[in-house]
Image (cartoon, rainbow, N blue to C red):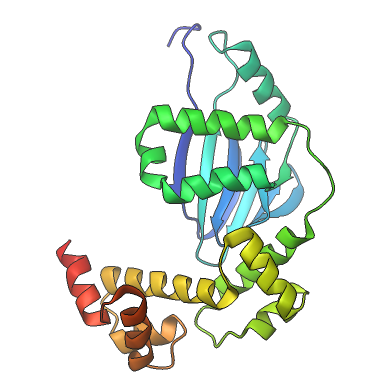
Length: 258
């Protein structure tokens, strides 16, 4: 590659498990939450990537991470500035190099929501990925109001607790207690940020997980029902029928046929 060539940022959807020893790489990396959470140490500073926080790992910076629950992250690899790179883009990357952990503010949340619904397009089209990456990097370096959005903190705690306890009997009062808020306030936060209710969100996650397990595993329907928080196969059958107009057996059949 000549020194006038410009490398592009690359975007990937990744899951992590276990622990990774301290290492470094020759490009910047931005890790953004989709589901679950991950403990990470960057240049000796510990933190967490979860619904409320992302991390920038500057090129050459030693880092290690640990992920103990199921998770999905958007990972953006950003090349070092080169002579072929536009001045504004190089300046943006230079600013990012001075950052580490950052809050997932509303404008970044909008980009993540788009990525959630357009993952195939983002990871399959370099042009779309580059446009999305440029918007993200611009959002990260723009000045912003430092007043914290306590609703987002509450929602982050609620979502983390729900995702880590889908197999258990969950109640709105319990989720509210763990999230440090009242039931009424929890309903307001879910409506404001997700346009849904806590119970509807739990149901959607459970049924999405059930569909994944029906498609990707040989587990019995009764075992899947227990793993996603339903008391028995009949309860899962009722919920799936109501939401998708499918029985678990038929959902398994058509997902595998497809």
